[in-house]
Every structure is written in C-alpha cells, then in structure tokens.
Image 1 (cartoon, helix red, strand yellow):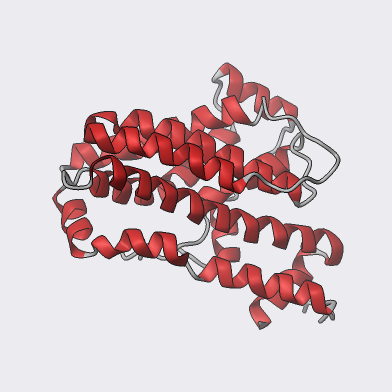
Image 2 (image 1 turned 180 degrees about the vertical axis):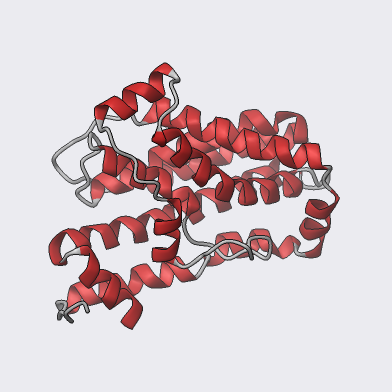
Length: 262
C-alpha cells in the first residue's frame, strides 16, 4: 500500500490544477463539440474505407512528426516559458488554408498542424524541466495525443489519466537504438507505441475531418478548429508534464495516489 505523503501547498495546487485540465476538455474542444449531432451523424455515415484511411493517416502523421521533431528540436538545460501563443497563431493559419480547400487539403493541414502541436508539446515539456534527449521524455510527448478529452465517440477507450498512460505504454526499451530503428524504418516496439497512440488520436482526427467537411465553415471555420485542437493539446501537455515534474520530486506512486485522492 502506498504511503500517504503531504504535498506542499503550492504543489497540491499544481496537482489539483493538472487534474482539472485532464478531466475537463476546456472551452476550445467544447466549442468544437457544439457541432453535436451533425458531427455524430457524419462519423456514422463515413464509409469504412474512409474511416480506415483516417486511422492510417493518423499513424502516418504521428510517425512523421516523431522523426522530424524529436530529432531536430534542441534541448536547453535552462527552463524557458513555452511559446503557446506563437504555435496557436501558426496552426490557425494552416487551418484557414485547410478550411478554404475543404477535405482535399485535409491531409496536408493535418500534417502541418500535428507537427506544430508536437513542437508545442515539446516546448511545454522543456519548460517543465524535461530532457528532450531522453527516450522517456520523447515518448511522454507523443503520449499527450492519447491523453485527456472525453468524446461521445471514445466510449470504448479508457479516458482516465493514469489508466490512459498505462494503456498506451508498451514497454519501449532500447534507448538510442530504438530511435535509430525508427529512422531506418525497422520494426521495433516504438512503432507499436506510435500505433497505439494513433488509434486514440484518430478519433479526434475523424471529428476534425467531419467538421472541416461542412461547406459553410470555410477558412474561418478551419482556423477555429485548428485553434481548438492546439488549445486542447497544449492544455493536456501542461497538465501531463506538471504531473511528471511532481513525480520526479515525490515519486510516481505517491503522486498517483495523491491525484486519485483529490
């Protein structure tokens, strides 16, 4: 049985705030969900091949951003404030392009948006003292795409924070060798990890696809949807890495117990 610990007042506030972020999808994604029945009907009407395409696209995009971002973003030992507003502005521009050209530009927009979201997630991780050169940190960044948010379409998935972390963790080992294997395209546990995250991320990707396919939305709608996506995953990243920072201080089991007791 995990021994109860006493967090400082500030750390308890940080943990409570993180839990609130994890369990509340926030105004941005709530705004997207206002499409309600239209999105639900659209998802149900999507042909099976199109649903499979969206799942494959989610995997391809995540695989690509891991290779391009995790190996190029420099790590700084000094903590710096994350550039959240800058990344929001960039994805808004990409969304305007995607919204203007509709479903035909969706794959391009998703690729750009997801890459920028990963950069923002890594930026937040670094601001919380994470070492981006470590495989564990890189996996934790990727894991954000499978965390938080409760959708009417993901009832079959465990959405609790710690349960989600366990569900997507696949015991990836090998450190640098695992990352080098990803670059070479060879099969390794890291690819399975990406596939597991992609299976969850694809649910939100599908909702984004259907929402952007609504003709009346146009460029402004596409920009708003991308802003909602970026705001949501920044929120998840802020909570996730705040919790990991507390775990480094108090130990993972202790913080998990404190999280559940709040």
